[in-house]
Image (cartoon, rainbow, N blue to C red; front, side):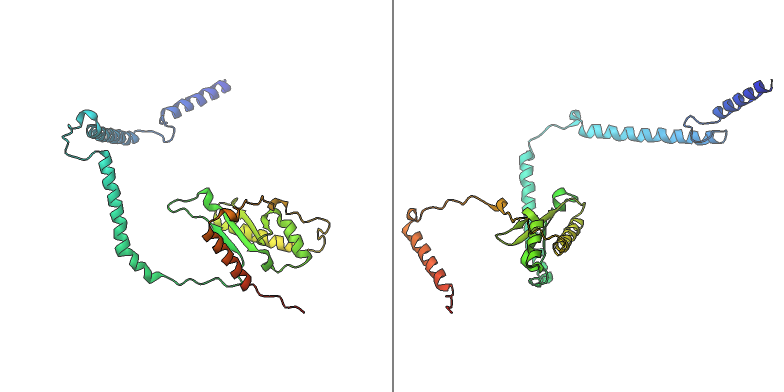
Length: 255
């Protein structure tokens, strides 16, 4: 009997809670909250009425039935496009005449970077755009002869660099675009270069048994036009140019 009474009491409590809970299941509803619900419904009805009036005005403004008849007193679409291009040209002409001279006050003379700055970083920047993939890429260029490596260290560094080293210009070129910003990619390139130099200076393994291979830099020679096909003026110009180079070349001192 006690078990049946407990079950009945629990069922009554559940029904009582369901009656006092709003359908949204968020806030309990009682006598005091009925007025608030009524005010909310009135507010919603007023908003729907305002939106209906706005939609009606938009339909009247953009509806094809309400469009007045064309009286042939205006330009066509291409005419307006032409006028817009003329406005753009005049806008930049005014900026060139009145605003460009004021930039001379902020001009700075160009100065060559000091000899200690041997690293060259290159990146692209797209005006008006952010977070583009091509703007994250950074390219590092450096002359290997300026890194202070000699002998076995230099040879090991070139082997570690691989195809990123160009023997014709003695230049190392590396690029990075894995990070989300160009600054992080620049930092990653600098750290990679430091690690390469530190690894090249280690004497535990100098890679003396690994041959140097620059086969990736072998290109087919470009065919040249025979000199006899050129005009007499062009042949004379090339001959004078070769003579001037020979005269400018210093003679070797015999011991």
